[in-house]
Image (cartoon, rainbow, N blue to C red; front, side):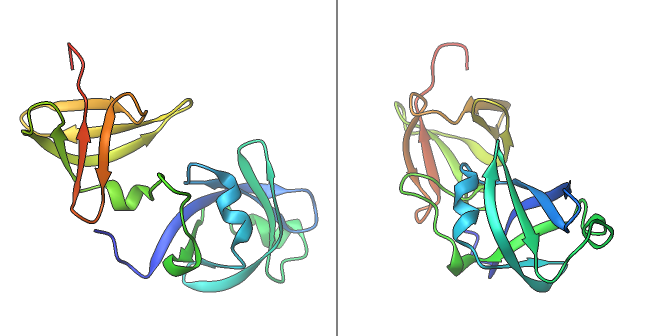
Amino acid sequence: MGNNEFLEVGKIVNTHGVRGEVRIQPWTDSPDMLLGVETVFIDGMSAKLVSPRVHKSFVIAGIGELKDIDAAIKLKNKVVSVKRDCIEPPDGQYFIVDLVGLKAIDADFGNELGKITEVLTLPGNNVYVIKGEREILIPAVPEFIAETNVEAGFIKFRLIEGL
């Protein structure tokens, strides 16, 4: 589905300390995924991630040559991207950008429920927003997901009474 060269992986939400480090809110299931990335892109410019580490659910890192808080503050609210081929999600996990637009199929009956229009990242777990005849919200947890097949363009969901 999404075969763009770049992948948005998070947003710089604040500075960290006085030496030019930033706090990145990762848009991945696991902040550890960003630790193996050397080069990121901010506003189309490449920069090195310096000494990245996970702190709570954020990634703290220096960005390229930034040495002080005044330079780092200019990056606040900027989106961080990586080259897609530099990052691999762990088995069984997917990039949100690859899930949006997939067909949602009822695993029991085989009928199409609609398309995934959004993935809400909420505390606890993500939630799929499916728009078809009506809008359905389904938690992204194993009990509800029968099969994810990004290549074939669908996710099969097990529905429960009331959904």
